Length: 107
Image 1 (cartoon, rainbow, N blue to C red):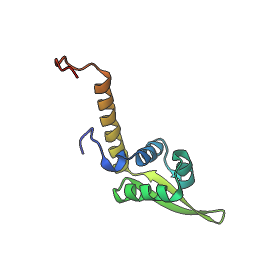
Image 2 (tube, helix red, strand yellow):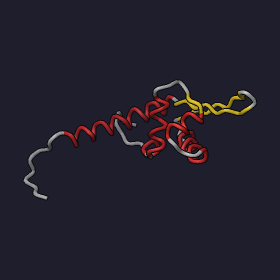
Image 3 (cartoon, one colour):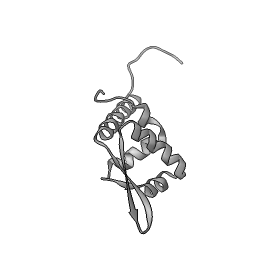
Image 4 (cartoon, rainbow, N blue to C red):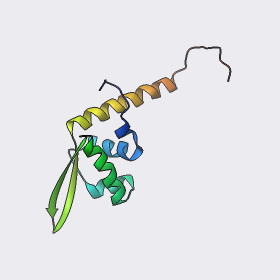
């Protein structure tokens, strides 16, 4: 993947938010991510499945207080893909913020 490139797996708003959260921590618990992005368990599970299938996240199950908990971390490939995606968004935002060359086009 190039240094700055859109990633269709990451680009969906829910998955972009998940990657943003995970990029700032070593790992996060399923319920924390669910609550942070305000989705149902099933929606979060679907997003995580797509990210996991792409090799972008790792899921770890652990029993805690008699309940099974899922912890999610961003895999090295996910960190690289997220950084490239953010770089491309930043590049595009810079283009939109700067005046373009005078083209003589009148809309």
